[in-house]
Image (cartoon, rainbow, N blue to C red):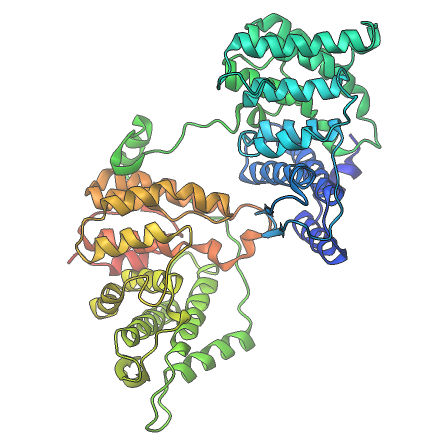
Length: 578
């Protein structure tokens, strides 16, 4: 593989792929071609990453694989669904997606069997084949009617039978037995032999060999499986000349089969080679979290590490500039929102902006220092006071006036019941109140609750409800259980889930497990912001959710045995037990 091709695939990738996607969307309908082109860009980048990190055990590699899959599955979904039903394609690496409605003007398309196979192999590697199974099913129906017996078409059916359990027999039970899967695979191999009279060329076709590998998986013949996978892999060594594309470093078909052998049958990797990055074969297999919800399933080695003394958790240093002009504007906007102007009451919606401006200043400054500075303490105090004041106004009747204290001065606002006091703003205000620890800031938030002015239909709704129940003394366990379940929804929607497992330790009253869950939560936060260009986001410096729970735990009298810039020592020390 030429160094130039690898360097070109990696250079400025996050900006380049984002620009490409948005250019495509502005040029007209994104169809099968455009989504597949994005998938190939992700694949080239992933192949380039494998040169420096052969096992691909990094958050970036996992995100790139998942987004390559979503783009490829998007190409398949377009062919399967348009123009019959609505569907949505989303790439969280880019925070970019498109929605399609029935009957819209975009052209009707199909996918080739080879593109279908590459997309399905990606879905296997990212463990998303079942998620997109319906799209693969309907896209396969658009293959040419006379294509039966072609190796690529028959392999598509073989994958559907082995992976999804779709044997093509609508009258068969589900899931199919191994015998039923084997019958479907044997029928596919028979159709291949009959179509071309069993010629050597068709029997040695890579797609036919892959079908034989699937048959070996189904019968448990590990030796035959290994022989087939090695046969599929051998031609790739000849592809890696100076002009080869980095994606050829990741041969999707043998790689997906190796992954199935490991994950479904528990077999060892059929051959030791950098063509099979360990993370892609195992599905990014790891030891798992240090602890589960409510202190369950604690890993003994993690317990021992925490018991040995304070654990140091590093944060990548990525200081962000705070431009004097931006700082001055943020401070000006804050002053305008909290400074009385004559006898007229102020509009409370400005408090949401003031809280956000001070939050941004706090987080940008957090990127520049491992501990909280005096300026950050002021940012926190003003932000918390603005949030509390905003929700105080939601407790009043319409047209009433509400007097609050901000920055030591009384200020009067009109009652407010608009969207600027929605669930997300409440969530931020509660975190700020828990970090600063002032009861007068927390009280109006507890009285108001997250849905004072409107429904919460986000992936964070259950977590906010659990947090509210906990703070007001109601049993939070039912909402906490739902919050734990909805973490996957947040991931699917492209968000970093709330620290529900960490919160559950507070609900359970388990101080030791809180330390373990704190490390897990910090690790999830760090990994999330290690992807793409997220490291330059001020939110990467710390999580208000995690910091709020840690400060609250301190006020409960718990010791925090984690030392990290994500948990500024000055803030934890100020969180004195009640």
